[in-house]
Length: 403
Image (cartoon, rainbow, N blue to C red; front, side, top):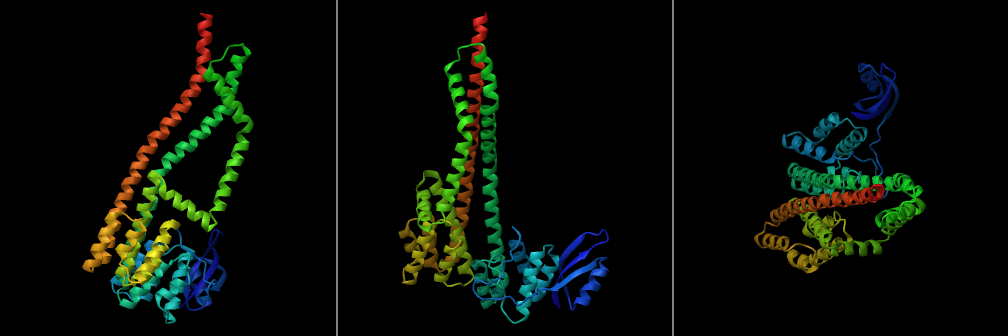
């Protein structure tokens, strides 16, 4: 059966598109009519994608869909379904056009005699090197269902950690942005009108009120200019980060910061050990596994140290000694890796180290947020208190004069 991409109209006249499997275009039209759809356009999905470097397919999956597909595939394979039937089943359950297209082409390549890893390499935007290499190792070892299960668990944990990080920082971020907007509105629109009343009555304003008036005038005259300068500076900084040397120095500077540096080191170390654990457990050679694991690291300084570690291991050095010499990994992680090397259970020790570090990351993130929230509230409260005092003190002063 081939895959066909169709465009049709339903009974209400609304356009409906999708991908369907059928033998011929005539069969597609019959299937659409059975669903009370009027065929408008039908095209066969081209499975013969050019596999040259730089010409691979750019289709990607929806956010959060990859771990679901990997886990479904693992479950179906473990249940005894052949790989091509498992892909058909997942395709039928998918409700997203891009996902259907990817899965159909994966199966088409499979039916042509290519391995699954080769088919996945055609979609670098959907399946990164970690996935394709692990799948290749799983296919070669005949243990694909177990490899896919470990990949699914890893991807789910990585997604959960990312969501937890964003959710933890969301409240302080909203609080700070809202506070800046409210205070700016008060300074530009409210404070000048209130202060004008006192100035019309020739009242002598207290020091805090005069300071607020000066600040309000400055914000009204130069606030827009400062906002533009700030935006230009941010865009300039983002542009500078495109330079690899500047980005490397910036990342190295971040690692030296008191709290941020420690958090980044532990988070990146957790991601590295988790990835390396999955690859070594999937029987990927250690040097290749180190090279692939470095690609999941975002900090260039740590990434460079892992690349040096891979070179040292290739020359015969032990993994624990090389990581210790580079100096970015926690002592507990080094000890667990050393123990794993000596006992021959490196992958288990890497996973244990990753579990420990991920708990540490969650603990540190919770601590940072628990400190950040009250500090943000305190700063906002102080700013609003100063504005309220600056407007109330002249009123109290006029009342005392009148009495």
